[in-house]
Length: 193
Image 1: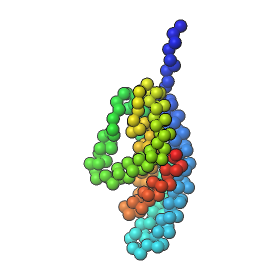
Image 2: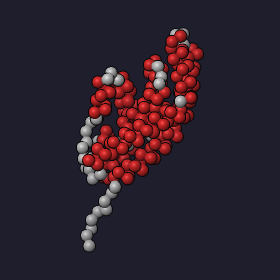
Image 3: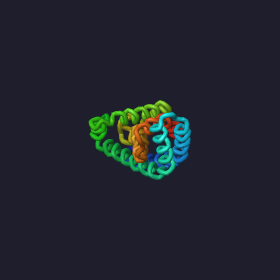
Image 4: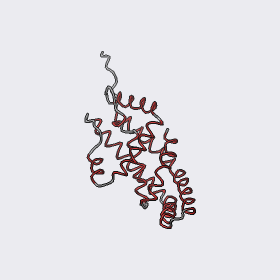
């Protein structure tokens, strides 16, 4: 009789975490989007600039009417990012970023990349201890000594990319898209942590 340690299915553990994150975060989104829409509506009424007023009013309308599309894009991106990161983790290839992230920089979407990184950093700062414990558990499930937060499939980068996939689905004008970023950075971090 051998005393072999039980083999953990890291992929199954991540799948359970993915579904828990997808469900929990998706449930928070409609009220968050409504709150942001209400703020933008007030901004549109007080703005002296006609273009800004129109963009904010349009964004408020899109936030209210596009909630289903936002949530769907969020869920699709979250699942895709987590699944891809899990495959990379299972293959043993770990690294900082992927070709898609680099192509974003090449196609002048640097501002969006900065927004994604900023949200991910804020998520990490708000839940640093929990994230460190979680990364440790994922590392153990995949028989790794240490797992950097960036390599954690259900880490802040996957969540941040998913949020901005939802924003992209709203098809907002540039000024309005910039105006809602601070709302996501402030209001989205609390429900996640």
